[in-house]
Image 1 (spheres, rainbow, N blue to C red):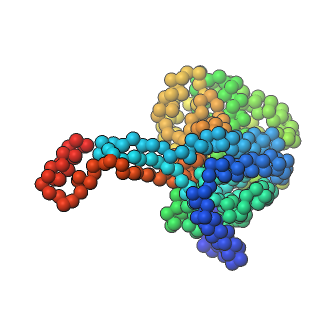
Image 2 (image 1 turned 60 degrees about the horizontal axis):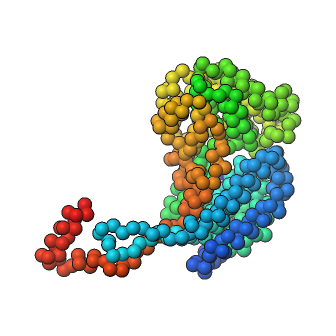
Image 3 (image 1 turned 90 degrees about the horizontal axis):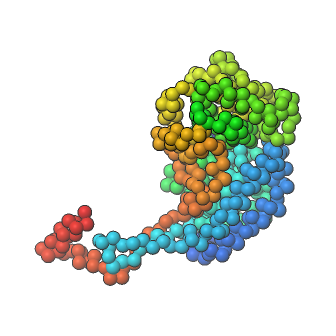
Length: 484
């Protein structure tokens, strides 16, 4: 998603702006009326309705993802449907505990009081979803928003119009419009939405656009959760299980045609096993997607680049690398009419190539040899903190050294991408790769305000109130000595 410039805002006509404003106002009114009455049972009922609707719409969701970018049905089930349905199941199981006010023990200075932390809804939330996992990253955050007691507006991506339409149909059939609404549109619509005083914004997309979202939210002092991305590095150590590493990396990289924010962006492989590893990657690509270029292009198991603009971007990355001395180890086949880029392995990578600087977000995997793990760690630390980092090695101390000496949103050891499917792990980045976290209780907390509650029972704090007589001054001095 792009954020519109001031000149582009005029694309959104007056009636569309009025519609956006009236939808937002209706959610605000309903949220105030609902406050305190959106009980555990009511929230679970809404989650049940969402689950049932997703299951009813399964065939339409699969057809829409196929129409938008030829996403295979098994990938739709695994990466779009399963995460949301699993999120609903996990949330329902634990929501009572999450909602319960948590007792906080009193410190010496406030003896005689009772204190709690009570999660309450933030209010009306905006969910801006991307195109790469259009259903998952629209309805997954919605589960957390509803669980926390909020109303929400979803802005799905205009780049996947068929799936966006299905999301709108699901929401319209499932929820009253003053609880959840979908507003479709382009960058100008996103800008109009971001100008409104939402109580929380949940954005998934690129770091560059994330900065613009955060800037827009700051004008209303709106809190944000930013799920961004970056160049997630992968390290294959000298003691790695080569076959297992190749299997996991090929799946994590080329599923969804590489259009995954936590896909391995590039691989550092130890020089002692580089030749074997490269061959293992080639064998795995051919086993999964087809032994010939023709078979790979015709397989039903391989997605497409989402549109012509992104196809051209990915194609240009390959051309730039080749022009600057890179070697194509596998693939490199493109077809502009079909937005097709074959699974591509690239070696002889140098720092002056665009693939070394830009988040690839496509089916290109640079393979870089190394001898010294220090040099790899230094390269990782010289770049913005990634959303994910992957390490393959049988030696636990090798992996632990990488974990200890780097910073990333998550680390996968001898696997890729799967941590996204774990509902009890926080999913989020660090700095350039994101702010805040989602999934399970972490998602519930992202959409909740943790209100402090304190009740006086038999406290003695009034003994320190003015007027500050000599006796009270001595009490204050004693309290400072004892409590500090």
